[in-house]
Image (cartoon, rainbow, N blue to C red):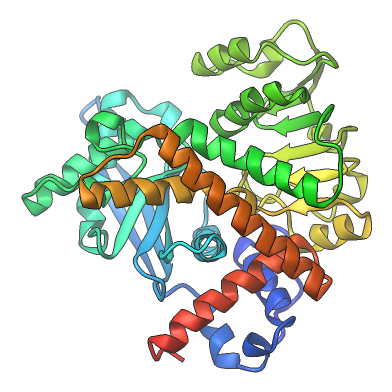
Length: 423
């Protein structure tokens, strides 16, 4: 197999290819066939469009948007839509690639894509946000039909935005199509249990890994990087396990309290667009050293490239649970492994968003909706099975959990490609 050049920390796509290469080198089917690596290391299609939107002041502003569709061997594509001002094509391609293997590791029949609009949504009014959301669908709907690619919410997008997008798609195709987007409100065909079930998935996978590692599951001190939807929902759930969040941060800084925080108060602050540093009963920190503070479990829940070769050597946590997509670079992975830190990778730990999104898709297609208890049972069953599979492969191949997860997922994608005659 052709070697991938040394990883550049800020090049997300090269990092993604390096992760795949590292895992491919561990088993024969992938290592011995360059054609397989050539296919899975590039997206099938990447679309770039410019979207004109009339603003509230009647001036037109043009936004650049992407849709990367990586692999549909396990078809159809499934992919989030992110609204954020900081992006490049490399990152969009990388995220679509990671998501293909995230679906495969938990064995759901989906490929993956990724959408992104270059915009700071905080600068838009609610009406401008709606016009932009609908314009995105108009620009790309020919690539987004439900049997081909089903988008869902991501950073800075939510159920309301998905409802607008679903409505716009339905208008364009002249029929109600709740299955065209997931992550919608209940009134628009959304699924019960979405918010709590996905966060509960993180708790389940962490508990299972601690159990398999023969670690005590009580009295854990937690650091959560990024106090927003994912991190705060997770924090509220772990309160019931006698775990304490002692550090929590956002883009402005971090706060510390050895006795924990009033999470409802922090949630309300974030809803009002306040920073956690305005929380009064806490010690404050204004740099990026929160990842290096002493704790049992470190939870990076922000964006990509947070744990790098520059700070990995200073990580003191015993376990790292990745809630964000790819917060740890490949070179940092090696350092954490050498330090005997158990890293529960995003490809496994953060796969439960797509699992519940898939549940919503199934319910939309059958027009039959499950009770929340049934969703939780299905989720728990999948989590337990997938986590155990990854752990067993890590033991068999004597490798880290990320490589084990990729071995499982790459094998499943390869099998689908071979069955379809693609390789």
